[in-house]
Image (cartoon, rainbow, N blue to C red; front, top):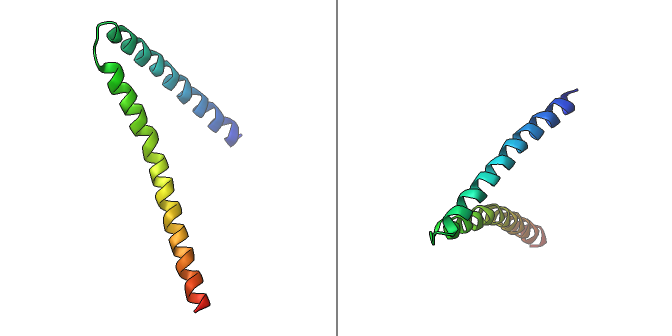
Length: 77
């Protein structure tokens, strides 16, 4: 039962997020015709938001690698 409720909550949250994307798309399309730089700013924001999770995961992976290597060196020495 808990899984069903969680699934329904996530489904409703994603529907509202999808409608917001359509609103952003409409705003950018209307401003792009006027020569505004809103589309370029939106694209830069998307790239920025995509880059941060990869940077965090890469940093954590590097720290794990560094820690494992340090432990292996202590055991070998």
